[in-house]
Amino acid sequence: MRRNRSIELWLALLAMIGITAVYAFVVASTNEIPAAGEFFGHSLGVFGFLLMLMTETLYSLRKRRRRASWGKMSAWLKFHIFTGLVGPFMVLLHSSWKFNGLAGAALLLTIIVVLSGIVGRYIYTAVPRTVDGAAVEAVELERQIAATDAQIQTYMASRPQTSTALAQRLAALPDVSQAGITAVLGRALIEWEYRRAWKRESSHADAQVREQMKQIEEMLHRQQLLKRQVSSLAMARRLLAVWHTVHIPIGMALFTAAFIHLAGALYFATFLR
Image 1 (tube, helix red, strand yellow):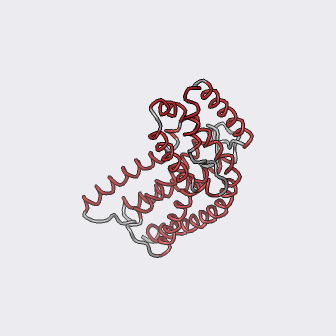
Image 2 (cartoon, helix red, strand yellow):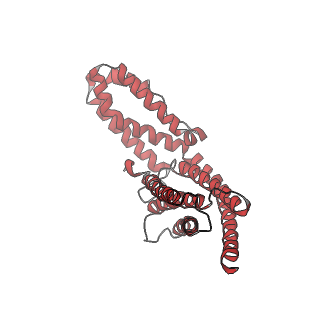
Image 3 (cartoon, rainbow, N blue to C red):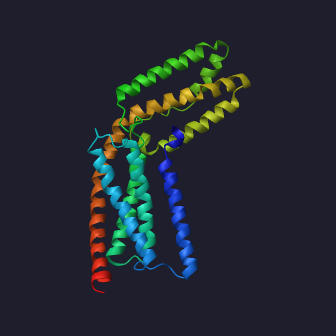
């Protein structure tokens, strides 16, 4: 399950690589940057805008229909992230690398919205969720921590010959269950420090204890992860609330500018011909 958590990012990267390859082929064939008003550049803008429009509307509609049966919330979020990356990338290529006027303002807002979305995704993943995308409450996390603790104690009790040395090594590991904003925004660094300490303690242990540490690693890592989620759950939700108050108005400003730009493009490039 963990390997598939970021599949939408990999798919978006592959899509952008494919689009870039086609764009490079067009540039090489014509020896010029595709103009925004020509067929290829115009097509990039149209399809990119449609993807951005889907990003803005479909996931929001699905969130308002939580009891609907048309797909899991987690799948819709992945689709939201995919279109939210690929669409703006196509609009960027559509710009012909010219950033003046209303189109330039819309492109700047697009970049801000994308960066804001990346931050939002990072905060969103700090809130533990079920497979369906529903948030897990603190009571359920505490229950999972108790179950993991019991599993670790049972494992240690079954190996009394190495339990003392193993307990000393495990006690030397840093506590990653930090509370506050650090546990949300800095959790990647916390995780890296924990992994580094684990590797150090494992390398200093004798062969028997090192083998036991290897077997208990997954259980202990899950325990630490659950503790960190409990301590940071309230903060993550507060940060998400603040993020929404920033992200949504910027998104609305972006689409206002985009619709004005689209109307102007249709008027000057189509109706006045």
